[in-house]
Image (cartoon, rainbow over all chains, first blue to last red; front, side, top):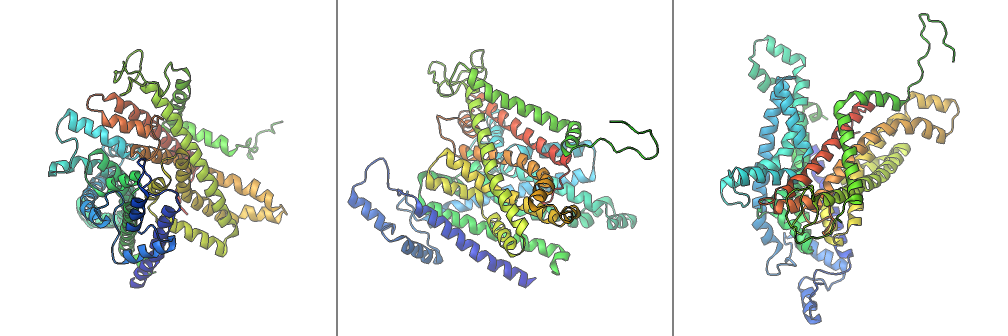
Length: 305
Length: 295
């Protein structure tokens, strides 16, 4: 088990290096720098700017310098907001995004699991059908449709929430619900499938025969096995919540990293784009690794391998 | 053809082709049929409306900005007095075009990559599939955004970038299929009968991987359209004055407080299309009896 974890950790290192090299290389390939604006910059100022960001060095020197700085955790200055470092911007915005993402994941798990379990237990009843229909809507309707429609309905017409902002706990409700909804739908489907399979197994019948109560059979005996497909879905779900937050933060005007990333792409703020991509890659790969380990640990059959 | 007299041994039934069987099964799936029908409807609207509409998708009419749905403008107009129906249809043409082109790119790369890995097997296969595994673990949406940041906002780039992202699953499916078909008994039999490689590939293997490929293609098209709309919504995809569903939804969201129709109609068209494609894809999967295997 420990060996397996170690191997997986070591495997991620070349992947990360490849991501960094690829992103850096692509950014350098393009003709035209971030200072080629409509307003002509005097050549001496442009030279100074390029020296400030180390753009006057040959490309491979720039890359080595970037790697050396990265190893110390320094992502350089933003090219758009020249007085701020990328680290500062990330430190400022990442907590908001993590907060939103965490809430969304909680929504996805809570809604998805309970809907899936109920649908499996009350199979082929109206409850099951309505849960499945809701899940289909959640899967087909993307976040950027659901978000504005939810704002229109709950914030503008019913006035239950503010239409945008991230100030008080009430502001957290709508964004995390909308962001978590799609994944709740997938999780509900997976839970239903997993639970149905487990519920037809012999050991569940045995548990029932021994007089365990209904809820006890479901929660203590069936859930463990029924959850395995859900766990393997957590990796993609986290990745999806991450990219989904770009949209949610735009719709609800939340000052998070997702919006900053999209804006940095629009501004062609190379250092900020690069720093955010690397951060996202590290984040995703780490979380995927954790999910993998969790999965192995929960499944005795793969643990012994 | 003469029918022999009936006895216990039934005469062989007239042969059903795979497609005939599929059609029979698909016909029973009401949801899939409904999907196909509404898809045709949306496609017809998108193709016909810009051709017959008295308005162009970028014709502005500053006397009739934000007019609600009426006889002159069936779905109303936007902030520049442009006819919403025409813009939705034009955006739909673009979405469909991107869906088809990017899916074709994904199909081309994925099928050839998977076929090579599947046929040659061994070390080459292991190396190629390891690469796919690594690419799978990359945050791809983020890469597409990075590409946009680098090359600027270019529609053609969008086609290629999306296609380049979506081929991975196709490669896996094709490779897995070929790998198992290669070892199947009827391929062995064909080989024993002395048929050449080309004939075996064309007559025996290709028809059998067609099912999964078709199913996955119908499921890739909505994924591609979703990615395009996602990028356009963020301002990273299609640029105004061109029209796209993602762009229209973003515009609608900006002014939904006073002019909700600008949000509701594009959302409606987009959602209907996604629903239909998903239902049709699911229906085809059941009809072609493709097991939901990834490998």
